[in-house]
Length: 125
Image (cartoon, rainbow, N blue to C red; front, side, top):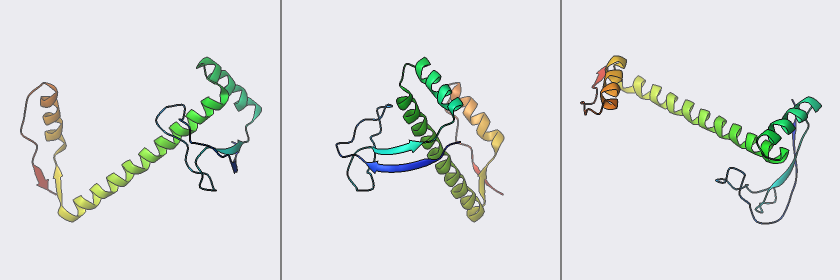
């Protein structure tokens, strides 16, 4: 796979990303706007990107930006999920309180059926 090399930033106001919710960050000079980055791609990957982009009605540039943003968001969400799991593990270690899995599943099933069951009780390990 290719490597990433950051280039020099361009001046100007930040613009909306292709997903519409995120704007580009600050470049090395701390001015708003996108920075230039070079991706070294194999010819085969470049052709696959061009075809996938065309199939989705996007330019190769837009397709790659969206792919990088989506993968970055996925990595951040995974990091946050793991951190949350580790905090929960510390809490269980500290207090020794857990929920019985079967009781939680029964509670969820009842909720899905529109019932209002009592919350499952925490139990000591």
